[in-house]
Image (cartoon, rainbow, N blue to C red; front, side, top):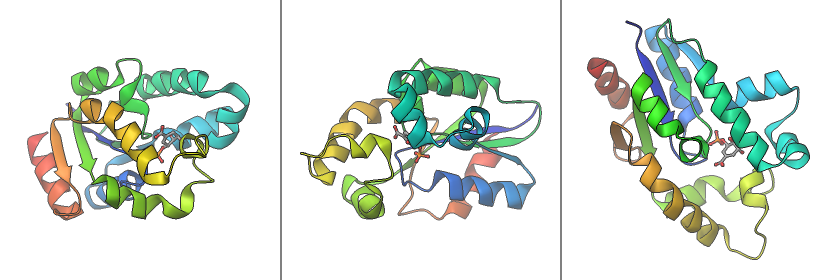
Length: 170
Ligand code: S3P
């Protein structure tokens, strides 16, 4: 059976970078749900949020994750909100190994400081500081992320270790 790994976690956690590293090192197929959505819709994620709204985006995400070809070894980098809607976390846990790249709220703030304008989910709430906005989202999201099979504090463990541990478990 093919090895399927889903990387989950907040925006800026490094999911896409890690997915590319794994794919290059182990010859896995690499899929990024945001990229698949942008290619299919012919628009950027920010444009999709602006024109269709978040609810529609979440529907498209749920369809996208369910349509990925799972017949070959694949590592999938998922959008930061994807695990928290439409039972996607449950679905991923049934279909592969989930890995949560966990960062502290402060660490995420540092990683996202210059991206507030380009990230649709962070752009909306101008009267909140970036830190309190991340805190609010994390309160809602971490119960979903924590359902991952592996929870990795990415600041403490190297990507290489994550990859090796995960692949051994497949
Ligand atoms: C989102 C995260 C983004 C993208 C969209 C919404 C979120 O993905 O799917 O902007 O709700 O956290 P990344 O985590 O890959 O940046």
